[in-house]
Length: 536
Image (cartoon, rainbow, N blue to C red; front, side, top):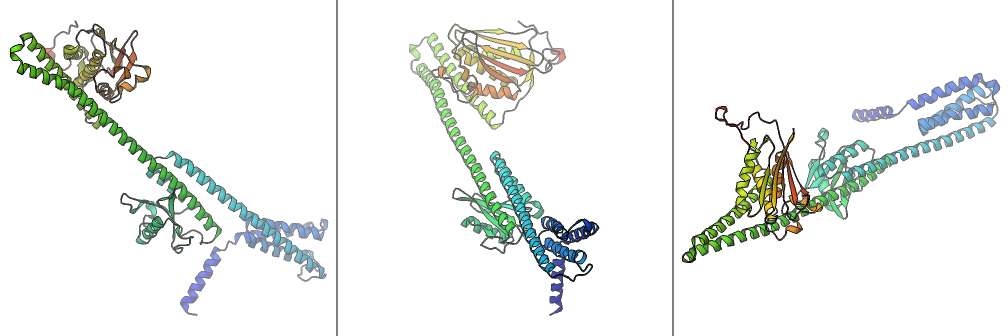
């Protein structure tokens, strides 16, 4: 044999010796020695048969804690100690009575059988514990998967569970939009494994064929990794790869248990991935349907709202142009007023549409300053004066009139929308009350009308986009005004709610943060130009 061959043989011998666990044999030797000393001191009180039976205890302990090899060693050592110290002639391995040889054979047979049964029970206990741990892992994993809706978090959770259970590196391969398999999760500690050409080739083969490949399987069993297809409902969603290079050799019991565990985890992971993907597809379908519904509602509302004032403007303008000699000055003034009302209605619609676009796109920017509530209400009254017709607007202000921090233009738009709704849905010759209250932290503005009112189930929904109460379907509108009000008020850190009026109608309540009230009524006016504020 060559020197290299001898070195390899010596290295194998050294490794086999190092891998041998000598501790059970040492404990067996110590137990036999202590038991022999104890029995020798009690020899006068015990029969020879009893002493032979007592020597079975170290054999049992060695089988339970060490296995079959240490138990056979303890049995052999026990027979030798029994023969040497307790069988005549004493202190000799020779036997005066040959019948003792039969006793020795029976003792060894009983000891080996007992040790074999004990070792088998120990192995079964170990297998039972492993299966219990596997079942607990699968149960915990299934519970966690049912609560996770994010795909990346799901894969990370499965990776941690598998690596913590079998102490091996775990990688997921999932297809991209072009159905090309890509590494999705890979621990940074061993990022080199799994992304090579050989690993990718095996993973693609498993993904295409839907069969297990790699270590412990019937395909490419020499590979250090095991590749499990993530199959659910006849579809493969990806591949689970585990680096089993340091695991037991294929064909062993532990390797088969690991294979079954990975197959079960692969099935759970595939079901969870399918659930997440179906959830994403359902959300996308819902968003698509909702977008289509909103688009249809927007087109219907805008087309209807624009068609009416445009027809009015066109008709009035045509009448002025073609019937100039026929109309008196009062007729021409009425037609001009009709044109103005139609233009104002179109302007409100365009303003609401632009406001909703800003809210939805996140482009709404607040330009905050101290706003005089009395001035804001005055601006609102002037804007709604042209179409309030025979309705009476009443304003109730506290003393002193409060200020609040906010975007004056946007807050005026909120009040215009709310008051316009109150006018639109209130009968002629009814009262609309605008009231302002203040406490230490909030400024509350209410607009109460005596109109159609809304039901309890509609009080929250009237602030949704394009929603209109059933009782107001006959009145023209887009359903955007209150939605815009809600967005602007919430951007200011406030709230807007709807409540029934005491007798009839609706009360819209706007609550905004008051901030620290300024010491002067107009803090933005230079001190030399300020005049005393007299609230009418």
